Image (cartoon, rainbow, N blue to C red):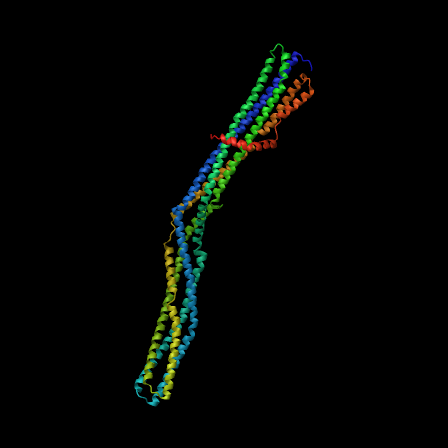
Length: 581
């Protein structure tokens, strides 16, 4: 060991004191950076707490407001009015389709009228021929009651002329009715096409929006409990953040203890300069410095580890809180599950505005069909009247022929003619009956009842009105809900961005690396000063390695491993110390 002079000892003590003063300054800077980081984390935690509280309150209110929509007068009015209009339109559409089918069936019946009318017309012509023949034969035989019979024959001929005049009217009615049926069918078909393409479009669109909102209301029953749990979880995380932030005081106290030790060493070193026996006292004290330094280094390392653990816990819980807030916002957003809620309300307003005009078009078109059917029924009534005239004349002819038969003698020639008359009379009756069946079917058609139903539904449609004020009230309420959800999403995004920025700007890690390097340099200088005083080179080497290692920051991976092992225990301890600020 080298012999040192008093002056050399004094210089060594001064240099060592300066070294520890420099180390103390580095530790002070480390403390200041630590304070800055914890202050930033404390601020972001306060923002987290405030935003979490606001979003929790907001989502609770949103859920309540959405559930209240179930009994909202405006929504109930929209639902009731739309349902009534849709039901009336659909029933109307069904009746119109049935009307078209019935018109088709009746129109097809006219194909079966041509032959019976022709047969009837021909049978009447044949009757006229037989009557002429009968009159001729009756004159030849000079039968009794000839005068009366001739009068009956003259009367019969007049009836034949009447019925021959009525037959063309019935035939013309067929053509008129065919055209009128076709017009009624075309009118009904046009309305039917518009029902699906135009008239039902507006109420269906309103119904889709209302159904979409009603499904969202139903979702809230399941989402409400989940939201409450997630909001509670967020506050639990924040309570643990508060607990970890409080560790900073403990960490700061430990660093201050290291500083106090350094100051004591500096004070002792400065006091040595006043000692008379400075060489002996100085050497004794200086030889203790490596051991003291090693203890302080270990304490600084432990303090650093606690700091890292606190930062990691705080970061983890803040990130978990941010993630939970995102889940809360996503749940709120999923209630209506639509990126275009503003467009939905705009669509609802537009459809509600257009609905009266469309319904006016529908009722006007229906009224056109009602009027067309009235004209059709008039034509059918005329047709029935002409047929009834035909039938009445045919009955008169039948009665006259029976009277004529009573006056005729049973002579062979006359008998043959009367037999033919009876047969022809039956044919006339059959052909007229065939005409009558079809005409009676037209007279007793279902068109009237169908039109009555259609007209009834038209009245229902005309009575249904969507009140503009109620429609506006509802869309405004829905917009307010959507705006609040959007506001929450914006608040979360701003908070998340602020959190990421804060975490990325934690200065302690890089600063610690730099400061420890500076401390190690100072230790090297101190070591070089005290090295000549040691007689054991191996011990000196081991001591220096231990000092450097103690002051060197552990890797992130090692710290994370320590943290993972102790995490559950740490969280349990944190839960026992939760305290809101």
